[in-house]
Length: 139
Ligand SMILES: [Zn+2]
Image 1 (cartoon, rainbow, N blue to C red):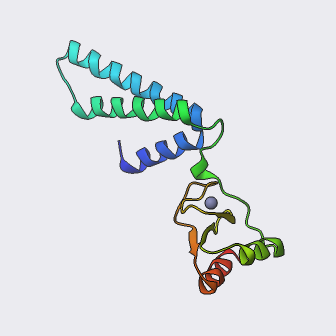
Image 2 (image 1 turned 180 degrees about the horizontal axis):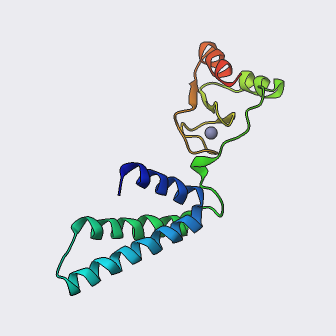
């Protein structure tokens, strides 16, 4: 399977959350079945196929159990909106240090965003310079 196609498959799976997990686990079962049938009939055995089967079932199973109903948290894309005066005031009044996710505009005390689960958009605010950068990133 081409790398691009595999990425698209994973994107689709995560986009569909729990349902995608079930679909992926199903695909893994089919792949596993084909691998076993192939080994029994032709004696051929492809390690890659067996590995992919186990991977699909494991990943799909995890997602099916722990996934959200709709899209997974990592694909939450809030609508861009101007920085509200309320949020700016909350940022200025919050005791430092703290973290803010510039994507979700979520203020928190941990590095990874609690809403979108990403860390790349999170800014640590230790002083007024950091605060200025964080606000600029959200405008
Ligand atoms: Zn976030």
